[in-house]
Length: 279
Image 1 (tube, one colour):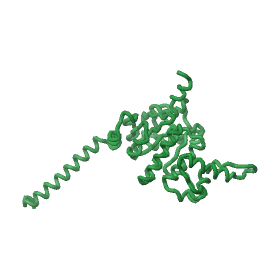
Image 2 (image 1 turned 90 degrees about the vertical axis):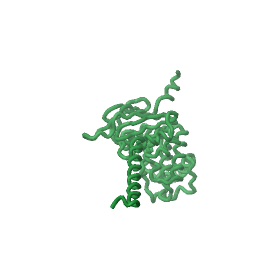
Image 3 (image 1 turned 60 degrees about the horizontal axis):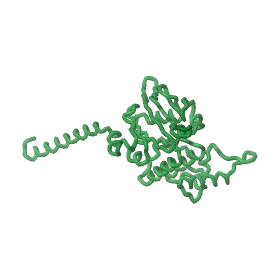
């Protein structure tokens, strides 16, 4: 096997038996995942499942306490998000760090402005680059001078994704990008996730919606109360199975039986009243 093939097969990010404690609270225990170039790994779980803790470890906000975290085969323990970003790991959070009244191009280069001689901003370069980079992602804005706050939620997510790609991201970590969006706008974001994958990026897609995860995902990690309850390749699991695992199939069955019992009890009571068998 050639060196080139070995490097191609090496995951961009790999977590092996990673755990995190906050005092006596176990936030994450023995969680493993990996994402390779041109792959989307979906992390699914309800509130309190450990998704936020996992994001913070990958993004460099918090250090893991147990297990190993590798980037391109090298063990790491980031002390800050800047260290993670320098290694090509960019995180796009649900509450997008944008300034609504600033133009799209200004937000695109926010904190990384291109400057000319004497420190003056190269506005034309930034406008032109923003336009071309968004177009490459399939976003055709008529005017990059419009305030970013005038864009839809899906379009703002896509600007953040295009920005991360332009500044050298190899791995995109997307924190619930479709959570606050309608059906149409969620579809827009999912298309751009696929485009990022086709450009060779690794994507970690955090979501609680299996119907958003399954069409774009290659691997699926399911979390519950800080533990992994399943890690599957797409070929090994159907959407229905993924949904059942995500929702807690046995718990839903118990709830359904309880509700059926309550409904049946009410129907018997009403029938007894009609027959005059109760007061």
